[in-house]
Length: 426
Figure 1 (cartoon, rainbow, N blue to C red):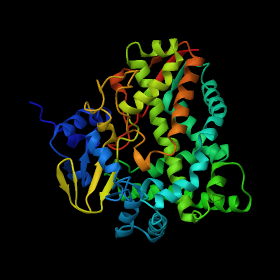
Figure 2: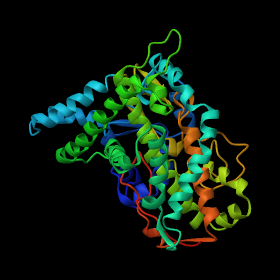
Figure 3: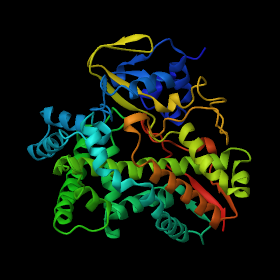
């Protein structure tokens, strides 16, 4: 008899469970109602229909704590309340709490969310994203050129981190000499997501990075106010719509944090997961080499099967019913997008990568409804262009380790491979 509880192991971020969270998700979906998970102090909502129901009712389910109890703001409150924390670090934590009072996009509710979305939509138009393709393609090929002569690469460090990081840094006008620092800031903002076991010392290190980020971009915001250019930061700073209040300084900082994380962490995980599927799913690599039109379909299926963001949180603003049970006002819910993406009530053969899903629903990897991911077109572009660059530059790619030795990040909320060593023929 199996003495392990896959659900408990997943939310404790045990290695085998985060590597393959699908068993835990299937168990949760099979239950009569959302299950209360004590470790994260939230109800796990795993059925597609229930998740969509919550997402479509922002008036009843607030996004104010969308990133959950391990995100940066709750960690800041923990530092402020800890008697062991020095005054310098406590001041940095207070700064985060103060800035976070300006809810933005991911954690904003109507009507604030709608106002912000209107103000920045121009920066993410289809025309603007399409215009980025030559630049993204050049970045991808330049990265591969750095190691193409060696016949070996580590997908995460040599490519998957650097492509989206360089793209978002360029979009925000960050100079190349600061790219490594930029990545360090990104890591700090996601360090607690999906992990409940950070020490006060580790949290303190996070806030040193957070403070650096705020200092740098506060200066850049002031520069763009004086002398705007054609980058995304200037578009945010200068955003104006008749009848709408311009973004405040703190709203801009919060927005930049979200663009930083969304532009780095999630696409890094997506690119690596796509490569892993291409190398481990029989016949898949040969199929896409023979027909490049399949690449966007593989991108969508890997988004569904290996959602980089496994789920986000909502908070009930009133007593509500989800999945047949009452969710008391003030309760948190963890919307497990990854579980909904494998719900057989919506997807035929849900655990299988299929090129044609025309008869199925749409996956939840980018959310749904009002909070559908603003950067989804950029993530799709980077994934498609990045994988095509690998196919352009190689005739064969092989995994340089056993598939079962591949390790995943210790998080129930983010899903990403730590390291993927490759061998290839140029």
